[in-house]
Structures are given as C-alpha cells and as structure tokens.
Length: 365
Image (cartoon, rainbow, N blue to C red):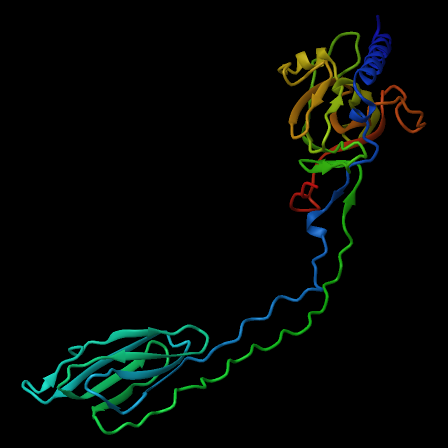
C-alpha cells in the first residue's frame, strides 16, 4: 500500500473514530466556535480619567503649656495645661524650694520625664503633679520632641491667692496640599490583536461558550529534524511540536489530538509548502517520544486541569513553520478554504516564531 492510500485509510479511520467520539461525549464538550484572541498586554490603554488621590494636609508642629493657676494649695495638685499638634512626645523636668531642711526639693533630679504624647491632629490635655506639703515653689521646664522652644513655668503655694488661666487652644491650621492639575490624557494606543497565527510561548484563551467551555492554549515549541534519505522515496523530515491545553471552564473538554492537529506549512529556505501532515505513531517512535505524551486515543481535560501533548509527523524536508488545530471537532465542515481531509472546523494556527512585538502575558479571563 503506497503512502497516499495509507493516508486515505488512516483518515477514514480517524473520521470514524471522531464520529464515535461525538456520540460518546456531548457536542458541547468538543465544540469551540470562536477563535482565541491575543491582545498585546503592553498595548493596553492606561486609564487617565481618574486622578490619583490628593496628599493629606500637613499639620505644623505646635506645643504650648501654662499653669491652670499660678498658685496651688498644699493639699492640691499643680495642674499643667497642654496644647499640642504633631509635637511628638512632651517632656518635663521640675524641682522646688522647701520650708524645711534641706530646703531643696529635687523633683525629677534633673531628668526629663515623658508626660504626654501628641498625635498629628490638634489636642489639649492636663497633667497633674502632687508635691510635698512643705514645698512652696516649683519650677518647671517643658519641651516637645518636634515643636521648637523651652517652656519655663513657676507655681507658688498659697492658701489665699488663685489666678486661674483659661485652657490653651488654637494650634496653627493645617496646610492643605496643592491640588493636582488635571492630567492630559495619554494617547490611546491601537491594541495589537491576533486572532490566528499565534506565536510560540504566548498563551491565548477562548471566549466562554454558552455551555461553559473555555480553554487556554500555549504552543511550547515547534522543531524539525532531517531524516536520512531512503532509496526510492522522497526526502522527508520529522516535525515535532508540544502544546499545553488548560481547561478554565466549567465542563470537560474532549479532544482527539492525532485528528485535530497537523503541520500545515513547511519552510525550506525561501520556499514555503502548504499541506496537511498529521501526527502518526511511526513518527512518534522515530522522534523517540514517550507515549504517555503522544497518545493515539482521545483526551478528556476536566475543569481546572492542564495537559501537555507532544506529537510528531513526517513531512517534507525543511522546518515546520505552521502547526494548525481544528478547534471544533464536533462536525466535518464544508469550508472550501479549509483542508478537506481534516476532521473538524474553526482551524487556527501557531507560527514557529516568538513574539518580539509585545511584552508580558495576557491575564486569564
């Protein structure tokens, strides 16, 4: 049996298997009616209608302190009134004079202690100090972590005098940021879109079908190897390709790789030859492929599953330039432009070239 006769017998068998497969599974598990679309990620227009949020206002550091009363009673506290804004920690040191020996009250012994902490927003507060009953004068030194300046206050013990002072208030107003100018919109680039002849390495996705079927395809590599000449036969090459198929939809996807995939264009120097060179077990054996990857049976890819298939075909000498795939394996089709010996319709192709036009990877739908 010569090669053309063998090819016709093989294709007849494939068509019969495809018909059986279509009956065994649902048509919706075989049928991809649209072509995957590749939209260059680096050509996606940048949004410009939403301005970035304005910077928060700036609150100037501020700290003031006074005595609620210059005079205090021997049984009562000395009250410091504080007004703060973005001042950080508030520190105080104090000492006093006594009526009795040793006549000096050391207070904080020359050390500064933290008496309050200021937040960014304005705030006020009181701080209380009880002193021994024979201390008749107390000297305070106060300062803040961020606002400049020392504050010196003196309180006196008295049972007759009282000079109440109003609470402190009114830190400086916040400084509002300068409003951002309205941006001039970026020019909208023309998106780079491919609906066929995809590049090796780029992943492409189909639209979700009404049945919930949605797939991702990535051709990982396409390569060719010359074969030794056989006397009395035309020269041939071995063409090998690896494709990754992921099911991101809601229903299983059923495919029959040997019937749906083939080499469609071979380049030999400046010459391009179009045809249909389908995978075969003999080519897989010649390529020394692991039959776990090169299968002569149908495959079912469950939702969330991904498989990698490596197939091989004999063809004319040269380099496989284009590998094609019949996306819709549910029907024969009568498209006069499609190869008549391929069981399936909606044929797309990958070219043996990497993408040098775009950068990045399109997101999964």
